[in-house]
Picture 1 (cartoon, rainbow, N blue to C red):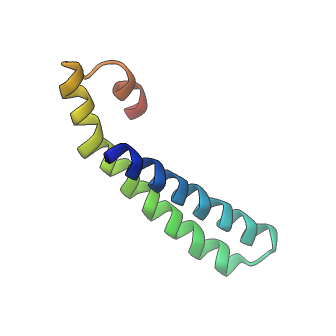
Picture 2 (cartoon, rainbow, N blue to C red):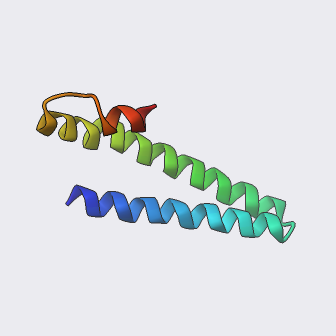
Length: 74
């Protein structure tokens, strides 16, 4: 199911961000940068999946593109 995948993917991104924060707090700039770059890449991919796959399906079911998907795109 799409929603289960998206929730799991969002949690994965949250974990990557937490790892980057932890590395930064330990003054490990190299690890912090590497982990943040991975977080950024994965989060951009997550946003892309929302905007290209999930939102169009929600909008088709609702019959319009206003409402929650417009807010999330904003």
